[in-house]
Length: 190
Image 1 (tube, rainbow, N blue to C red):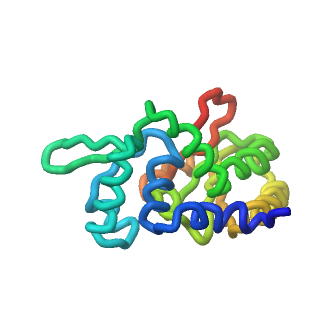
Image 2: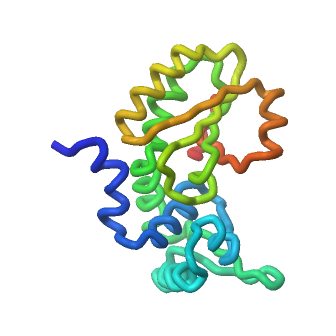
């Protein structure tokens, strides 16, 4: 029997021993369409550009990332045509607890319209704590709290959350980096 902590927090570290490699996996394989350049990742990961460049080159050599020059910057993104793209994406989502949040939180809350992840995970860095933003009308805080506590045990990470109406979210959106993880009635896998 495996503990929840082993299956989430340490699984990515266990399989991938390089912290830089972990951050790159999270950055590019947790959510679709993410592009970034070296200096931005250097600030986000708080690591040296040489260590990041070395790992980016390994991902490119393996065909998992694509690099494209735009002006003076070289942008990197996941190669969605690679046969391991979807398995890696699924693995990273599971180890980060995204699938558990979608299943056990978003599907249980009445009137929920959108769910976002904010904070360091939205920038592609492995978090100690997950920040969740829930958007909808008349959301039941006790239902949310109960669901969040259950998922915290499953993913072995603390989850902080805040709820907004769509109108309130417009003001929050301007200041925070956020990634959509769930949308009501959406058939698209986020």
